Image (cartoon, rainbow, N blue to C red; front, side, top):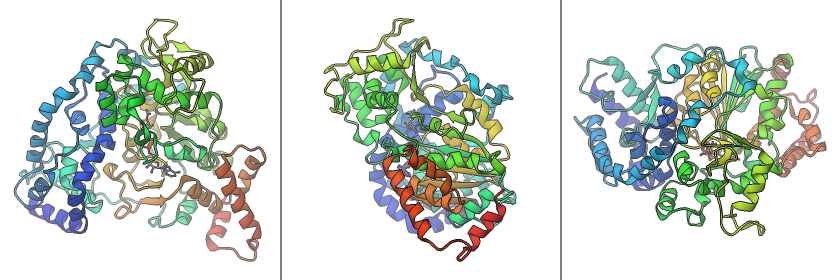
Length: 556
Ligand code: OAD
């Protein structure tokens, strides 16, 4: 495809949407302060390089900063003419050079810290070792060339002879246009997309899924053998834990001025609230992280929250399919609340807590564990309550010293930004993604890498179902308009999970949870109402819908 055709294609596809995006580009630039891309690269920089001391990459720095307001003009010039995105990227990088200085204090501080290396040596969860078959190749796998950074080299449109690049580029711009994303945005934010070749794919699910019935039918069919789940904070919202990036989420509601931090640190957190959970900041000043998490840590200790219907759906995916042997290959959860553990049917070995868990404590410097209850006692008495709800909390915070090395670096065993994910993640993903038939993504913005890479690492024949309040994942290739395999169940996790479980005929399996009071109040109410509605409906024999029938026939 010629360059002009490519550009035309983008123009045609985007005609409807680009105009409104150009108008809102300035707003978008503000939002990017806590943008998905920022988090994503912060993670990739360290975990992929496997080098804790690697400074934040140029792209990462770039992505922490808003698009310049004159970007509109450059979008226009890109779409109309001879220019290539490489020019635009170069321009952006030049802009970035002076910004480097602003952020260098963060990097410097990390370099001074001697604690960052310790996370490299993090031990595997012994319970999960049995799943590690070929750990030597997995990191390499993650660095593989399936992931394509949009840099100047790849976007040299003058190289008409390189058909592969042209084909890749065509896909990228088509996806961007379909989602209303200006090219400038892609180039400036180092968006990464998988390469997909043009080979036709035979889908095990046949026709493209267009309804929850289709999804339910596929789950029950023999053609669906291996299911993977990727979950995030939206899964636990019904239990009372806020997510991170919604307007009422942790980041938007965080009042950085209440944190015990320097002016510079407060400014950085105001600009990008996820910086409060940054490893390098923690080693320099552990108090913001502990203050942000105080309520969460103590809530976990008090077992304040209950697994939701969405969690129970994943449990039943294992216990109710394949004649009880289960189809759930793995649940990758980004959540640190440990609610999956309440669903014993999922099985501990089948659950990977990608970002660690809140119910243990350890030293970020020497890795020594601290008894969790002891840690909670210290959090209660030494860390101030920035929410102002606990009158017994101290007025000032003081850091928690490690009993082993003496440094003030004890924290919950969660993965902070710019620190490494557990080895079990890198060891398991390459094995788990093979031959997957269905990926269920629930309650996540897919903003954070490398967890989000699962979306494009599964086979391209696999169905991908997103259950979320908002449409996300375009930057990973999820395309609910054009891809036959992608299905969006837009809405609340609890409602969609309930609908799906009803279609699968699993609601009666949940009834005991009502009796034992194991569901969050709002979830229990939803379930109770649904069960009552079903009781009032005519029996299936009198009024059976064809989908239900096929489900019953397929159920083993
Ligand atoms: P986010 O807060 O980024 O995304 C939650 C997603 O769930 C958003 O797209 C919401 O619209 C959606 N959502 C919220 N409530 C929902 C509900 N009841 N039903 C359906 N959808 C709902 O949370 P994560 O994607 O989990 O890392 O964030 C990923 C990581 O970023 C977290 O693990 C955390 C964070 O910084 C660490 O702290 C290490």
